[in-house]
Length: 413
Image (cartoon, rainbow, N blue to C red; front, side):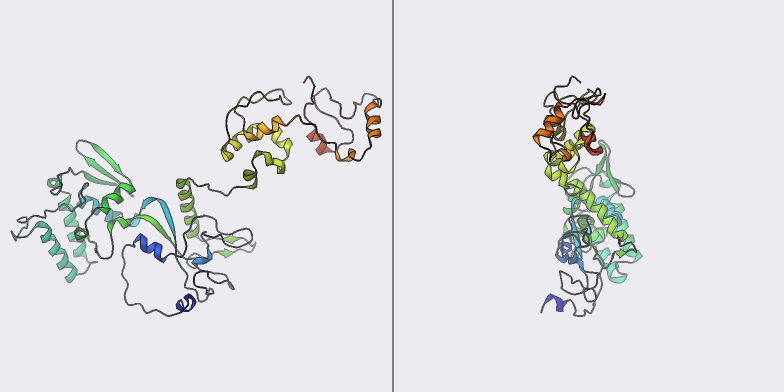
């Protein structure tokens, strides 16, 4: 049976169970890993591994899903995922994280209840852990997991484990601190002799990973379906496109859903942490300073200081001064490290300039006559230097005159 036909088979829901999701399960159910914060290209097609990748479903008519092969009427839509560079604390499970930290040891991560015999309040042959384990199981059978009695017994275990008589772990003998929560999600451990110590998400995850499965019942968790370290996310599920569809405005532009905007923020921060560039390389960046033909040279020469800093930042160029450069029109050279763009332009600034377009068809005789001919009145010769250090051209256009504002070779200016 093909994937297209399997997606059309109706499913009967037997039961629904809420809990924490395994990161491996998130990766398994995901159809694509989202890596770029871009949505659509200029031609209207979605980016691959973007937030609107067709593998997560389709919303436009006539387009088939790249995962199941169905159109938008029959495609059930599919999840994606984002691999986070750093673990992130789930804000919805802050109370569960607090209970786990206050009830377990900071070194061996075992629950702070006695496991040896003769610690049971009623039966000397059993331990303190057996006493609370029997009480929790009895409440689950009689009242259920979501009952008030279940929350009360878990709270009683937390108070017993975080009491003053539990400052030393009975399993490994390490000193225990007091767990403090600065809302919304900042945890600290305060010890009598060492002060407060902030716990980041990575430290908390390593702490929770060491908790044995048989001690999860004291935290109110089912060992067969969830783990406490899953509250610290390393993989973020991305909802399908049908959950956050984009709309087309009257102007033809697309407007994205609020969920998509938030996911864009997550991806940009994730790229910043991984060291990847936040934007795609532009053609100017790929060419480097030598390929600056698309940018007018006169603009670079008039604003060399701005291009020095931009070239050093985007191109990673050297900041060593190559030596003295020719002085500009004002006679001053910027006293700062030069970028590759300014180095190239200033080293090639005195090359002979080509003839203007209107003079390229003239013969050698006309050039000689124009060069040897007498000046008319006080008007300077064509191509001669004026008193302000610029070149004058009687027949040149305004743009050519603008390009000619440069000291000539051999001038004293």
